[in-house]
Length: 255
Image 1: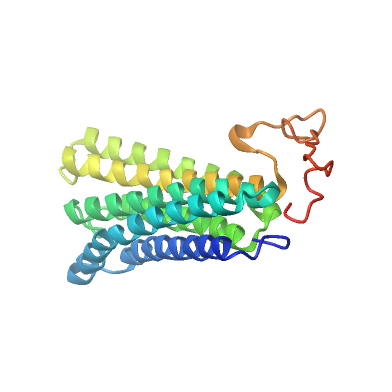
Image 2 (image 1 turned 90 degrees about the vertical axis):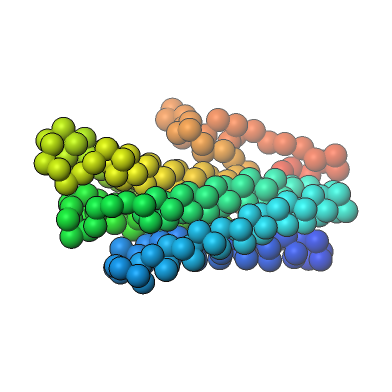
């Protein structure tokens, strides 16, 4: 991830497996997004495939954990390499959670009784949620694989649009249920809300991944909106850590 990273076989294996995991999760998210343009048997087929492939994501995440622990044990990394190892475990857990969210949404969509043509407004909001959460995930993964900390730092702000869509979906379901129009039963309403919540979770996790990328690349934390407006720095950004040999953090070959 960027220049200066060790060329050890263990590091290469960690990076490759992380790329494989990210690719698998993106594939799941893209497949789910595609179902908003299909219907009938084809739609159910894709949703069923998404549910079945979640086991592959779980397996990749466990494998990545093992490879990362081996890398840390054998190479005792410092500086950026150490941050990468710590970040890889954190990102892998996040990607696995995204996979779980996608699986749950796919399962719920299989059970939802109301079709898009029956309630186009609610389905339109869900489609927007799918689009925007997928875009945030794509950007976070791209920043991760390219080591682009600057791009990663701009991603969390994109989550506001997803939060607004989640609120909109909740309001629409509640209004339909309270209106007693007969188009939406309580069980289906709960499934629609659950889908909206999981899409929002995907966006949140993707933002967390982006924050981890900033930590890996720049050695600073931007989580929870902690920013010192007076100094223009995140908490701890101005600190300089000395290595045992006297080099400053960020100046070594592995930083």
